[in-house]
Length: 241
Image 1: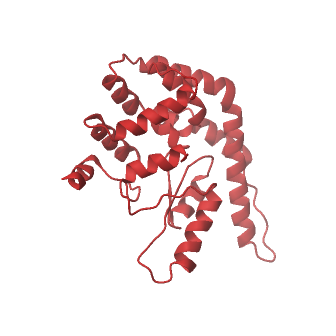
Image 2: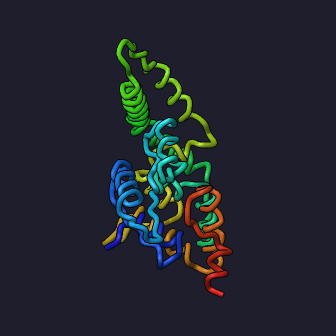
Image 3: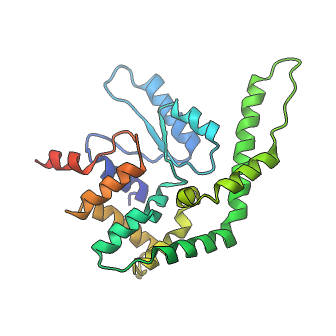
């Protein structure tokens, strides 16, 4: 069975001539894209590009990846799309469900602060420090001194960033919080799948459903600006005409 991210990207791209291949970590994606585009293309009119989750990457690392045929999602992972207010509201209205978004957001914040916050900030600090140290060591010349990384400053910056209301739902790890979103949309587990798995399946199915599919595609296009090959609702309609 195909992975949810493969099915999601195939649905969003909506082009059977484009092959979507999940390959693993950010480093593996970068290795595959670079390897194909630089050594395996052999003059054929084919190009590879990669899409990776933002995860705990530092801003400097993200900038470097963008120069390397990789698109970094503007959110922790693709599952964060399903926590967005516009997406939730659209699905709730289509399903004729009353969504209390403030209650949903409060529950998300409580779970994150109680269970994930410390780990999240520690990981952000570690990833920032690792990348910056690697870059500085690569530029090190005889007689140079290694400047302090300022771990305390990095921790303070990341702690402040996670408090920003407008970007909170994009910055936090989204996968483990989908159960809360599913519950607020009245989606219940069955004998085969969890509630969050059913929510992902429903979202992907609705992308190809008349009416709401167009609304959801326009929302996704706004949430993922400049993502290569992303197809809008208008383009899907043109392809069908």
